[in-house]
View 1 (cartoon, rainbow, N blue to C red):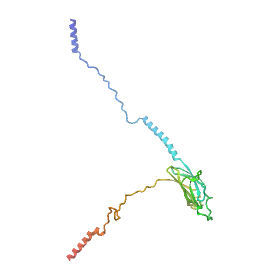
View 2 (view 1 turned 90 degrees about the horizontal axis):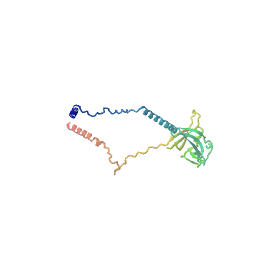
View 3 (view 1 turned 120 degrees about the vertical axis):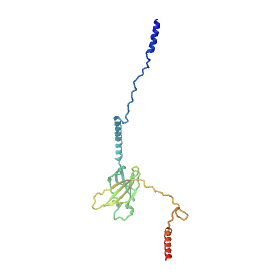
View 4 (view 1 turned 45 degrees about the vertical axis):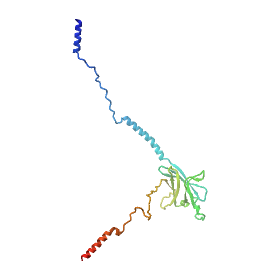
Length: 245
């Protein structure tokens, strides 16, 4: 009797109690944080610090290059002498092409006397940068007259530099000092840099025919070839007018 009752209870439980599905978690995965495309304040500060450090490193180098100066001593050697004499010492900046005269010794003792009737070569001299150890000119020389250093003349020393900033050549020319000008007889210094000249432009080859004319050349027409129809029309009008009379 008890076994039948237990079987009946088990049957009722199986039919009356609903089967529950396994529980699932309703927790959602944490959403990803939205990353902003704009740089944060830390990134901006790092970029600014890097630029300031770069400028602080470059500016002194640029200033040092701009302020770099060289010194050149100009010598003069008469053609009738084997010795060269210092004429002027010049400080120049290869970058800005500015220059200043440090010292100047006019070659008064080298000037020929006005009453001298010797060779005209005594009035000529070479000038340039000179190597005192080898006794030869380091730069190209220019020939000048010693009259450029006479009283009443103001010399101008022109330095020509190569691409590396070294003195390539020296030229001296003088101008007459005006009576109303200041009494500053010190030479004027100019610095120029050698630049590449313009290259020649070659046009197309000229081809001549057997007759010596350009091939494809259009021969200009004569007056009759251009306006023959006008003359023909005038002649026909004249003949028509004469026949009607």
